[in-house]
Amino acid sequence: MGHDTRQLIEELREDHRNMALVLDVLEQTAASARSGEDPDFELIDEIMRYMTVYPDAVHHPKEDLVYGELIRNRPQLASDLEDVPADHRQIAELGSKLRDDVEAIIAGAAVRRESFVKDASDYVRRLREHMQWEETDLFKRVDEMIGKDDRAINIDEFQHIKDPVFELEIESVFERLTASLKNAGCGVK
Image (cartoon, rainbow, N blue to C red):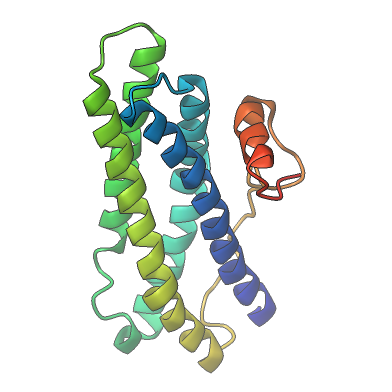
C-alpha cells in the first residue's frame, strides 16, 4: 500500500502542475478581455468545464480523502486543516460563477466585461493561492505521515479517474483547450 499511497500523492502534485498550466491559459485569455479585446469565450468555457469535471469533481475529493486520513491518523500534523474542505467548496463556487458568466456570454446575454474579468481573476488567484499552500504546507505534512507509516492513507476504495486533458485518452470536448496548451508548449500529447 505504501507505493500506492505515494503514487496518489504524486498524482495530486501532477494535477497541480497541470492545473497551473490551464490557469495560465485562462489568465492570458482573461487578460485579453481586460485590455478590451474579445477573448475566446468558447476556450474559456472549455477551461471551466474541465475545471469542474476534473479538479472540482476528482482532484479535490482525492485531497479531502488525504486530509481526512491525516486528521484521523496523525492529528498532531493536522492542526489548522479543518478549513480545507470549505476552501475546496469556495473554489468550486468561484469556478461555477465564472462558468455561469461565460455560458451567459456565449448565449448572448449581457455580462459586464468588468464582472467577467473580476470573476476570472478571483478564481485564478484563489486557486493558485490554495495550490501553493498545499504544496508548501499540507503535502509536506502528508509526506511526513507517509514516511512514518506506509499504511497511513487507506486507498483501497479509491478509484483512479483519468484526467480528460492530460492523460492518454483526451476527450473531444476539450480539443480547443488541448490545442491551446500545445500551442503554449506545455507538453500535452
